[in-house]
Image (cartoon, rainbow, N blue to C red; front, side, top):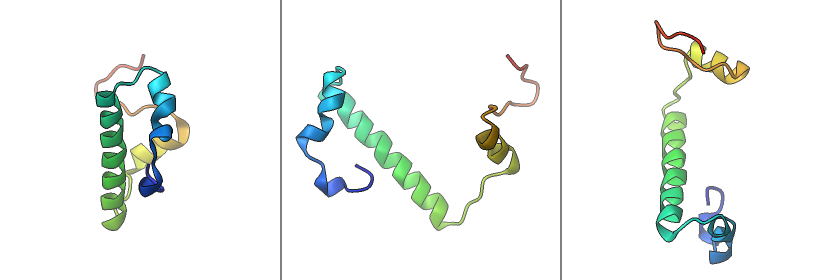
Amino acid sequence: MSAEPTRMVEADWQPLRELGFSDEALLEVGHVVALFNYYTRMADGFGLQLDPQTEEAARTGVPLQLPGDVAP
């Protein structure tokens, strides 16, 4: 859906239908895909960069914590 949305056909949704996704759930999946595409294009278009803490979390897999949070 992201790379070639005009090539999507009903069969592309079948794996999710087999997992029990309803039409409404598939619509929600489509909205999530569209929003992520929108957000990344806006960020890229404006040249936004991640802050160092977020880059470190992405690199290490260690989640960000708010000040005062206690690690699990």
